[in-house]
Image (cartoon, rainbow, N blue to C red; front, side, top):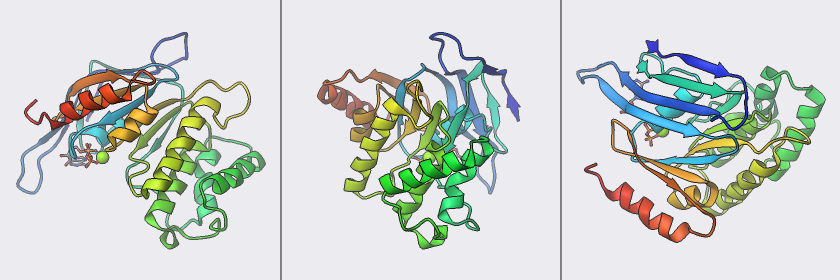
Length: 261
Ligand SMILES: Nc1ncnc2c1ncn2[C@@H]1O[C@H](COP(=O)(O)OP(=O)(O)OP(=O)(O)O)[C@@H](O)[C@H]1O
Ligand SMILES: [Mg+2]
């Protein structure tokens, strides 16, 4: 059950592109356990072109939050909020990669572009460039089950970024990658944020990234939100000014350590 005024607002000026106020999400009880309040009274504002990372303990509601931001009410859950506003289109990369097992890698990569109605030739050219950048060239005709976990994750990220939606909602996109590939993909994502793949004149993309990696959050994000243990609440909203990663890191780790909040 979903009860909130959902506004898909037109893009204007400097208004936030994503905003939730007083968001609470409750899953019904099942299998002998009572209901689970995943998120309680969460407020969040993300401005155009901002890169916001969300960190917090496992099970605190990060994926649930991202689903709501993507406009996908978690099935079976009761979702209530004073308001949820989303401006413009967004692409969501779920924590489980969501690749279609009956499609080979290249057609999987092109699904989002097809749904977005992009020109097929153009989408194919961009896909080929990205396969190269993501180290997936040669695997275009592979089935998802023939790819490693990290390759599947890169393919899922490629598919999410390809259509050029202005807002990217990424749920632990690098969790399965080795440290070196992870840093390479971090660098790619940081660069994408500035240039985009949607053609000339594109504005900087807005990104919400869920991650367990504090250094990744500090490297990429303009702001880091820390959620409490479940029910998730925002306990820290930390701006990360360039060149001030060390003090921000200390503050973040202290907030994550404080389990009693
Ligand atoms: N479809 C569902 N049905 C029932 N409970 C759910 C469902 N999805 C999530 N939950 C519950 O909501 C809570 C938050 O889950 P969520 O997946 O949002 O956490 P998370 O912060 O993303 O965790 P992780 O870091 O492990 O990915 C958990 O207690 C989980 O069991
Ligand atoms: Mg999750």
